[in-house]
View: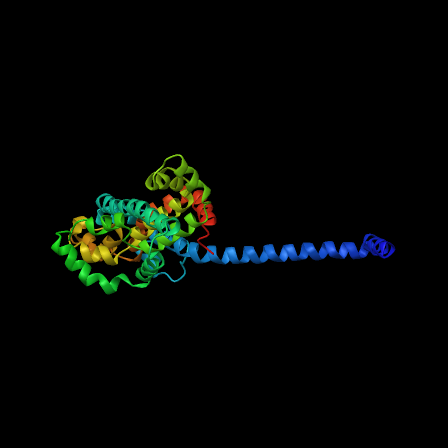
Length: 316
């Protein structure tokens, strides 16, 4: 048996050079094809997301003549920057920006804290009916908000919350709000991956359940916190349906809501000359001003965001 093993080993070691070179070429070819496929997929995804942005930027700098010229598609004949000041003033940008920031940041902060607390309870605390309650949380995620908007409107009207920001901020501190159930699931799945020894050690040191959650679990859940906070900010920023229902006065309008009244706002700002100035280029300039704040946030936090997505396993 030893001689047979030695002969087989020597056969493997003494394989010809052309065979070893072929194996090396095969492995390199497979690696090259895998990388090529990965880059093709990434380029396709980047194309889908970047082309609309490039189109918005190019169109926002066009003149009225460029918009009617079929030979001009991507590069305008000149840089017509006047579209941006017109869009800025017609949307009351500073006031609308403050409204959007108040709703987005306030709701994101409330959802991050409350959903982290609820998710910790579903992941680490054993109590009767836990699975049934979590199933109800998942059910609320499946129910479209349009189906319950009428009773919510009646409730908020009776509370005197119409034309205020309470319908967005207050429910977020109770685990509700836009996509609140999804954020509970994210925190639950992350807290389930942490070792139980951390809580046992904290309990031995005399820490309460709340202290364990706040001092130990939340700092360890920073990847989930980053993901939830950024998603909540972006989704509340882009939301148009609920603000359109609860906010009826223009002084409370958010930036996306201002796009729906861009023409009459421009008419007021220019003294009745909206028909001469309102065109696709002005709309694209206004759209770029709307997406600029969340785009800037992502540019500064993309490294933390990507790392957090990877650590939370949200893409699995």
